[in-house]
Amino acid sequence: MKNTIVYLIAACFAATSCFGIDEENYKTLEPIEITAVSDTISARLGEELVYNGISVKSGLNCSYEWVYGAPASGSTAAEPKFAGSSVVSASATIDHTFTKIGTYILRLKVDNGESIEFKYFTLNVNMGYDEGVVILNNDAGGNGALTFVKTLTSEEIAAGEQEVFPDIFSSVNPNLRLKNGTAMFMSDNTMSNVMYSAFLIATDDEHGTIYHIEPKTFELFSTARMDGFGTYCQEFGGEYASSGGFGSFFRAADGSIFRYDMQLGYLQRMDDFNGCGSIVRTAGLLNRSSATGKSTISPFFFSEDTVSTRQSASAGIKCLTESGFNVVNVGCKRTSSTPVYVLLQSRTDPESYKIKYGAFSWRSWSSGSSFTNSSLKMDSFSKIINTKSSNDAYYVYGNAIYRWGLSTAPGTMPAITLPEGETVCDIATNYMGKTAGSEGEDLLYVVTYNPSRSGDKKGSLYVYRFSDDSLVKSYEGICDKPASVLYKYRLN
Image (cartoon, rainbow, N blue to C red):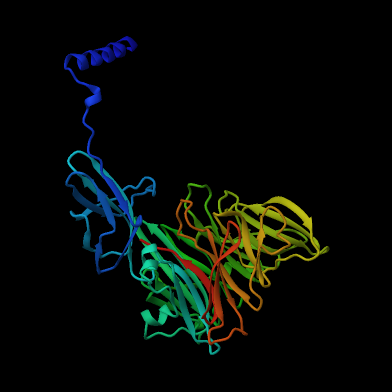
């Protein structure tokens, strides 16, 4: 075989000589050079996109073809793949009206008869409130609002488009009024190739109303009432999502646990948690088991001495306790197969602590480190979040943000201190959906309240970068007293 290959190579050189082909005089194909203002193009739903943001250099006349479609499974920015596509333009410009909200791949093909060049773009078809920070806030009279700080593209920034919207709930649903908002939760899940998504807003109004919002448009989908149970939703935890259902767990003000079915819109009190003590907190633990795995938000609950969970309707309640210790708080690693970390405090020696960790299956836990601390900077009401941008979890204590390495003792010095007079109300990351990628989650959003601030609005948003804990931007006096904040990521 080797001799055959050598012979063929020699024959090729001989043929070149016989036919008189001069390698030095081969014709160079006319190249094509494409430059674009941005690799992201935004279009408004139902409005014609007139795009002329590319420049093409070629010594020959060119033909053009713009194709768009949904990304296939496994598609990345480096290697875009279409799940299906259609041609939307055959000229250098795009003059097309897109009729479906979402994020798509847009491909430009340029052909000058000698060369062909491709350029890929991300196409966002927007409704207006597709991506940004949502702040649930209430004025002194309990009147609620959804303040929205939109994540602008470079094109939108250059065009000077509006960034802060004082109340998108009332503008989208003019016949509804929020009252005494308490919490928010957003989730999406794909079952049998159908996406189910929900944006939930809980209130302590006269009915304990839970608003089920369509997250792409913020229009009302349905409502559920808690007044029949004599309580209201105080904080959302995680979700239960599978082929058998799509629901969110939450803790009510009386310490009981409920499940809201996000497909059918009904409430169910989970009475089987009664043996797990008086639940003081619930948490949605965000995790992916590996760097290529999809992310989930799992519900965990804890009482004074017990940590419990319920992963599905059939799995039942799973509780773990440590003899002689109380639960301080529960955190989670962003990427791990054993992500759940529990900080415990000795009942007999309040300065003695230990850490236990385990998997979401929660059948048992393993022993981590032990330490002593006379002034721990954490309590049961410290909200803890994680991020792909750091191995540390971040949490609230007092007027500051601290770091916790989870397997070691929490920090003793603040990572971030808010300006004097600001009281931290809630924190969130720019979580970009339950994907397997590494994009997003590089920013920390902190909402605060300062009763001494001048003006009618006393609530603010501060944005910090995880890499160096630096302040990126502040939006001061943009809302009333915040109750909850989350990053509303883009949905297809």
